[in-house]
Amino acid sequence: MVRDKFPFRTLLVALGVLLAAAGAGCQHAPERAAEEAAASEQPVIEPRAIDFPKAASARLAAARTMTFTAAVSHEHPSRYGPPLVYTATSEVTLQRPDKLRVITPGDGPASEFYYDGKRMMAFAPAENLVAVAEAPPTIDAALEAAYHSAAIYFPFTDLVLADPYQHIAEGLELAFSIGPSTEVGGTRTDMVAYATHGVFVQAWIGAEDKLPQRLRAVYRDDPAQLRHQMEVSNWQLDPAVPPDAFTSQRAEAATRIPFAHPNPKLPSGAGPPAGGQPSKTP
Image 1 (cartoon, rainbow, N blue to C red):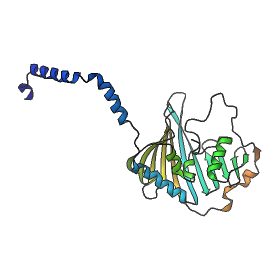
Image 2 (tube, rainbow, N blue to C red):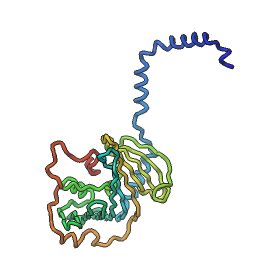
Image 3 (cartoon, rainbow, N blue to C red):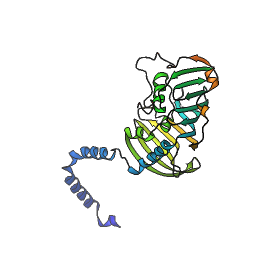
Image 4 (cartoon, rainbow, N blue to C red):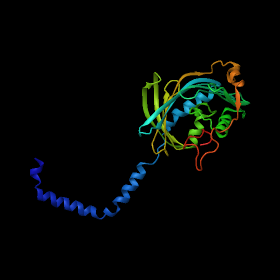
């Protein structure tokens, strides 16, 4: 046995020699360890990883019309500690560059949003109330105006912008490829993770159609690390869309209310959650 060839005393002597030799550098060991740890934690942006959102962005930007279903779920703290999950599903229709419709039947209060290039309407069908405002001439600008004037925000905003990847690139902190998956959307997807504007995102993007199938996000500044997830399905690119799809006679006839923030008198220091602003105003 090896132990028989090296008596215990010999091992102590050898250990003492090794410790003496290392003693001169001991005072620098913490500094070196900290430097190595910092180097290992430097953000990595893999070129292959950003190829996936780039391809998805190009596919979406090229579509003149588009429809899809977005099922969004987000966690919210409960009084007992563990978070609860709330879900809302929206049917989205757009026509570039200046038309958008979002129908959200529930959970929660049902809502409808219409933008026809000149006006935007936020309609609450159950209450028969509608807010109407003049709107800028593009989808990007209209969504930004809706957020700032009435706190209207859609989690899928990035998917309907003129250049979805631009927002990611502007604040890109890290990106890496995870690998393939066959568990989402009934198709083969490529998984990628990236961080932008303080939000860590894991995305499942179709390997063949290059369309987003699932996105999961956690805000870096959220101490509870609550998760937000969106399943995107029923994709149709360049379908025929009726001319009257971006207005509603029922909404037009509803009782008018101001197109304004629902809670204009916020407490001092209050504001939108970190990362909660629309893509063009991170």
